[in-house]
Image (cartoon, rainbow, N blue to C red; front, top):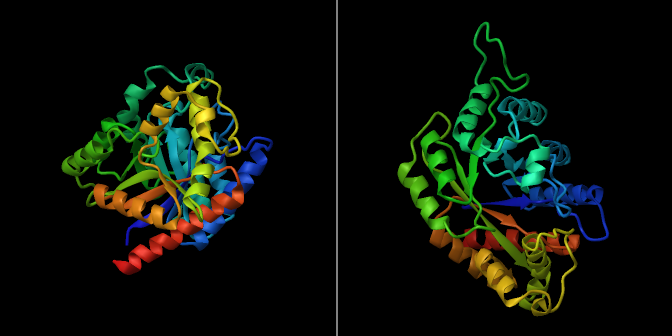
Length: 332
């Protein structure tokens, strides 16, 4: 059976705050665990008034403490923002506290704007060093050798699965070369999805970490009892996308009934292009959409991203998807 997982940006809602968002994330993770989702990932973003997971390792620890069996990790840590040793120590700490449940997904984008990248003390050429930084990070997790001058404590000798994440062909090439699992961000950047999966599978080199390729793809999914209600819920994510493109990011806004009153024709075209893989609708509509996506991509796992304003509606959407997953598995 194909695995289903959760990608959470811990959305800060209009009229609320980060504290409530993180409580909502933990509550969603607890429900996702009950509904049989495999893993729960949080993403690193900075200077985003609508995202509460900037201190990603801290947020992962909070979610992991509130759950028992579901894997918890990063989708992803933006490695160019950090020294590999510090990430090894952070995730070594998480693995020590929650053994066998921590994932470390890595991306090469800054996860923010240029000024914020400067405030993070990020070197502008850091993304160019991504493959080398990944290798260095992998080395910090290996068992320390006698008289090793610097080691990750905790971290050295711990089994923390590393994933390469991407929205272009580059990440696929890195994951294949290093023999690591690969996750593609088709929930917001679908253009290179099929090409990236093809490159990853064709160029994959077995490694001590993975004997054969394993690919995951993100997909925005908004499920409700009716198509109309799902489209209405989806409007919050559409507003968020447009506000970011306008250079005025905001907390996640309540849904609206008519997006044509909010966006320009050009903005509408941008959203429909970037989100053309989104699955939005009633259970029947969502089942058809997810089944088609899985058949087309052949991925080993799908990661469901649902930026929904109302927390109960968000829970209901993930519950619907879990029931559809079980139904598809039974049918298969």
